[in-house]
Image (cartoon, rainbow, N blue to C red; front, side, top):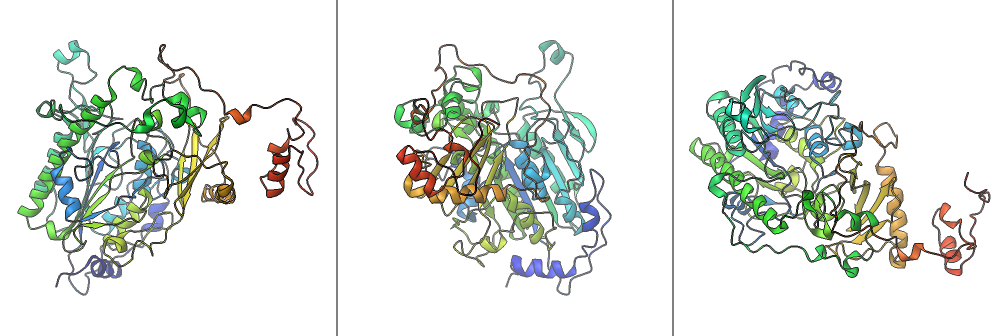
Length: 569
């Protein structure tokens, strides 16, 4: 009988020396402290190998088994023979913050990588450092996209292949023709050595990863492979072999994309204004390109990722490793295909926060499992550590989902905190305000910071497409107030502070609008009132039933034991 992941990690946890963890937690951008070699376990259990495949900007339903006509046979194989999590989410839907959360097991307000603009990594510890202490060999291949625009090797990895910033799909992208002719190419960092990119990025990253698996590691040790693709980030560019794939695939854009009074009803002003912007469906990336063709390019760019998974699976089978390796397929954030008139991500709506997630570990994870539990990117690092028999460090905020995939805990019994989302305004893309959200028992509450706009409440069980804003619905008033309080409490840092982090502004950002597009949206009709209303100061006081009654009657409201306001002090 094969050992389960539970039995493996129990043996490993009992045998692994973790005394170096406190030292690691205090180390900033330094090589991790040397770990004491683990004692040999009483029963010689083979540690679980792990492969984490991270895709960039992949929408939650962009997999063949969910979208008819989309060809992803290897992703589909993983889902068919493993566990699919339809409610996987990210706590911030933006590249750098999400990747920092994955690596640290901390939320953005605590790891402080809050946008894509050179946030510091000082003081952070990445979970592969703990895996190294437990005897794992670790390799990172692909997009890092954190820190001060450097591709230098990071602590926690024995093998390193990366690039600065977003990287490039092709070696000659964004290089003037004269410099291309002179031999200039986009560069990779291979274990600290500048190396010219030679081919299509998805294929080349896979080549490096396969070379490490086949020739660069010690086969006597367990391994952790972190394959972090650039694809399918915009502007998505497929390789030549897939340039015409999906030319005849019908793309159906969301019904909520239409600029109609019904769709705009209850939507914030910023949402209505964003549709005519860099991140809007009417002016996508400041072009007039058909959004459906952009979606086709995303799908075409996904196909090489599926090819990459096929190569990995073939290697595992050929080397007898498939039964002792866990593959996790994930995305750093979701993506909007015109939903509510938006493209990109960065907001708290479902297509932005939901991500594709499949876990494959034959013999350990039941085949064909569809698990509805809410799993966050916060939970990835604790999961990888538990699979290796490593105790979760105290600074991590997530929770291992291994009991879920092994069937030890039912989705109904899965207890996690409320799902809290945070996004901080970026001057580079000023269309989206700082956004906070909390989801509890299927009801989502959204509020915005530093912008004159409305709140939002959606009952996802009845309205999964978030079309009916219930913020002013009397039936949801008590829930809204409860979630307001819970959200504020949840957004405190580990030091108990409520702060809005930001990075330095160096230009105006991408602010243009299509000259022939829609103009600025109007404020909500209920905000337009006659002057000199008796209740004109009521909005300063906390919402209560007594205040509701005063508003309904057009009366002034002053809470008991509160002094009357003295004007605009």
